[in-house]
Length: 350
Image (cartoon, rainbow, N blue to C red; front, side, top):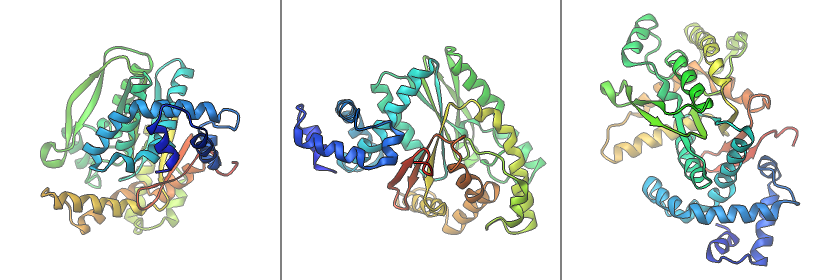
């Protein structure tokens, strides 16, 4: 943590020394400054607003860190200052300008931190006076019985998750109700532990007065691609059967486009190497086993992750999307150690 950030927390006065250090640090990352609308002209005001918000959310943030991450809060303060606070302020500003509830899409693969980001943004936005709810693509899964029928129709759908296993109409209905400011709204919820881990719908959450929806998922916003690309697809899309499955999943994506059209904005949590997801999943399973819970073996994890890569390969679907400024509003890079890298909206023209 930078010394000047500690000074912000230690005093109510705006000291000249830390102010200059904070200004220099805030403007140093040109891409990030552009994303959050920070200029030499407004940087003083930005820092004052952010420091006030930092002190306001700190008690709740400290509790979150200790109960969720089991880490000391000071270890997370820098990312709170550099990323989560300005992102929360940005979303609040977008909501204010829209004049109706904001539907914010968050796209990220396994282990990218979608759930954590949603929880922290909700905490920040609550302090800014905005009622925020999280909705996962997982919450839109078809019922257990419907997925049993689906598997009978297409035995390749051995796990829930790929395109075709969700109730798109349910998502459209929920997002439309929120956009129209209807009250109350029944948010669908999914219990992954039901039916021995197969999962099923559970009791919906009743919400009112929603300002912002954080709609997250592993392929939220992903667009169909040219089917010819699968002729030279990367592993694990190897066999003719693999390629046929990938093409069929690509076709299914068209059914999701009306859902993506509900998004006001799309953020991508983008691993600098998509293969990190495999290692992150292994680490998570090992932690579960060490805690006395059941977990998959490395071989089972590889089979599981490869299944998803066969359906929507990150190199084919996510990598091109990162460069498409007509679809994506913000990219947040994630390194192998889970630290955040570059944050940008249009890296090529910045």
